[in-house]
Image (cartoon, rainbow, N blue to C red; front, side, top):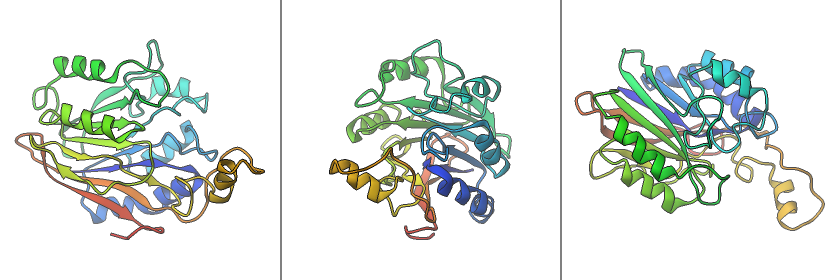
Length: 267
């Protein structure tokens, strides 16, 4: 059982790459289940729309996760209640539209739980992520309620991502960080069998400042003439991880960083 998780899709560049290459990459790498974070997929670089979600589903995506920009395109609020393949962070203040956890069936009929969480440090205010995680793990169990559990932790700081990874170690198949858009070189299986990487990177143009036009971003830092951030529009790289899952334990046998196309190294 192989699961592909892809980091934040950014703007039209990232969406074009998904449409052009994802189905072929799924086939080439014998992928059974695909999860993608798409909270930056709109052409403005923030939020996503119903049309983007439908395009991703048509191109092989099984589940879409999000983060702090989930509501930036307002029409998504109506769509998310109707589409259980689209998740928002579970620890958003209630009541909030949609859901932060769901169990899905893979192509091989395995049950895959996907949990979407958001960090508390330097992020929009939300419920205590460790309390929500504790409550979740008291309610659900690996191999009892689902065959595999994937946790997307959308957070700003490395230490919080590290901590949540260790907290879920032995209780999830994969804990993967999103939000900071640069892939980290620390993919590994933790002591108790959970695959982990601090950040999956982004599916976007890396000739940029975390997916945004580099010249405009530099001008904003230098307080020169600039406008609102907008996405870079060169060829995107797909960036994430591939996890080989153990069918007996539900934990990870291995994890490999995955990068395809664009300026980053091809696989």
